[in-house]
Image (cartoon, rainbow over all chains, first blue to last red):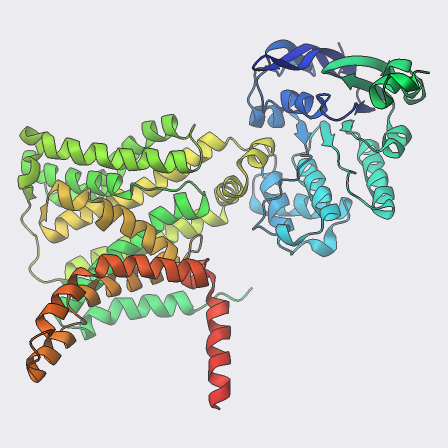
Length: 240
Length: 335
């Protein structure tokens, strides 16, 4: 069985099918890119994996365990970390405290949690912001803080939701380097991203979504040249 | 790291204070202040640190108070047993309440606590066979002197401040503040938010319940209108928290001092100064002024809250650096 598998998940908001029968799997150690036009249901899929919304139908398997009926915090305890597209820093806490709160999940004595938090902060390159209040950080660092906090829970799978959006080219390079570093440390990644440069350079395989349904799967090059994908992004006139 | 000596100095001062301050009236005020420290600390833990606004502190306060009173009037046990039992039974109330109502967020939870407060007030009023309703319950006071009460109150105040301090330094503390700052983020960090909100509420209820039992023992008389009072207990608890500083260890201490002082200044017409002016000058309108001033303390609470929210949103302790800066600045031109 696959490391992580989504089987025919469906989510209705009232009468609207935000996600309609999406299935894909992710192998251990790879980076899976999730792409699709605005409103196609990418973030909703994350919220379903994460347990933030209950599923209408379908099943999610992680390491041979059905996680789709667990609560959000239980899913995190199983080893699925996530970041939010609209960043949710713990505003009035310092960066270090943000990460310590996360690190407590698997490291009990306070000193252990602080040690892990400091290591994780250094790994993500936030050391010089360590004692700053989270709400005072610029957006690029806030996005980075999201990742740091998710990493401090020591996940096996991490869901990155548009961590590169709103960054300048220099910050973008740094973000790509960081994501690769996370993969190299043995963490499997599912990433939602609009910036093609990011998704093309780092993904091992891509799942393209439109109107809550999978329209293409495969290698980055294969998916981008797929006529369905081009149609979804550019409209009928650009049909390849 | 240098350990601050401030708290120990303060503790020493509070220990010898009643020996210097022999006037029973001021000792009475100090007992009230210390009781409010306990209630304020309890309120601060659930509302200030965990961010779940408790609008019905009187529910736990009154429950603790009635536990102590009923122990003595129905079971013939010393009302002092109400101190531990009042705390424990308040937790027993907080537990099912939290389990159900923590599914509500923000203002909805606050309203639920308000409802709990009102439910208890009505039950205590209507269930006359148990509580004697509006007649209230009389408990014989153990001591004539105020000193023993002062030291019990001091012990409870210290217990609450130390409890909050220890909790906030631990993993629980980090979790509580995470929940306050962003509940969704906390969930996705693997924090069982329902469990930790319950934990916070139970500790709060325990502290507030003990304070209620102390009130019964000290005052010797309770009725539903006083101990389940919305504006004298529940709102006062919020004011103590906000004025002192939401989410600070010593905020409730400062808040309790100020709120009890403000209440007394208005209630007594400036500690009798207005009365004295009225008598010595013989102005006939002074008696009217005294009457209005003594009734204006609720209004003064409102004004105080507005001032604090506008200028010191983090309370006196939370914005202490701001106050100090202001004081230094206003001194400089004079020099």
